[in-house]
Amino acid sequence: MVFLMETKCSKKRVMEVCSKLKFDSCLVVESSRSSGGLVLMWKSHVKVVIYNYLRWHINAHVTTDPEAPTWLLTGFYGHPETSKRNWSWEFLKAIKLVASTPWLCCGDFNEITCQGEEEGGCPRPYTQMEIFRVPLNVAH
Image (tube, rainbow, N blue to C red; front, side):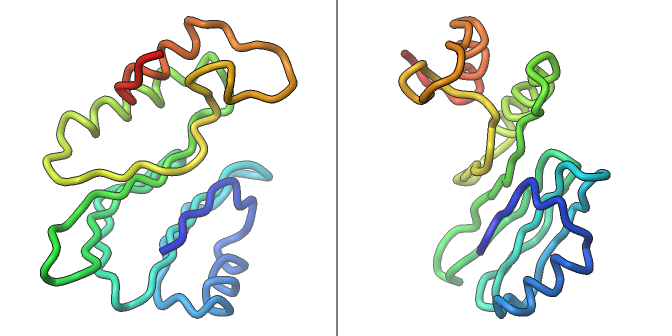
């Protein structure tokens, strides 16, 4: 499986890449103008059932082995505008509350949990990082 974000590609181009990489299936959330775009690609031996998707995420139930339990994959892209990230964090908290199966959330959150994760640039406000840590259940 591969999850891509910020593809900035048309669905046609993503399908060409998917085919060249020999993936059997993919879900494309097309980019809006020249920003965004999400892709989830998988091969046929992995059972993927798309649960839901929007511009900022793809949720899928995944089974990699008939003997193993199904797990939830969230491919995520945090809102690039700081002022709009609260929606992103509320969304993650809501998924976490209803996820009764193991959950893997991956992608680009457009946020950090502590200053040590940032190299260069301006320091992030502590409260901004604290708000992000809540849905992750991470203490610093």
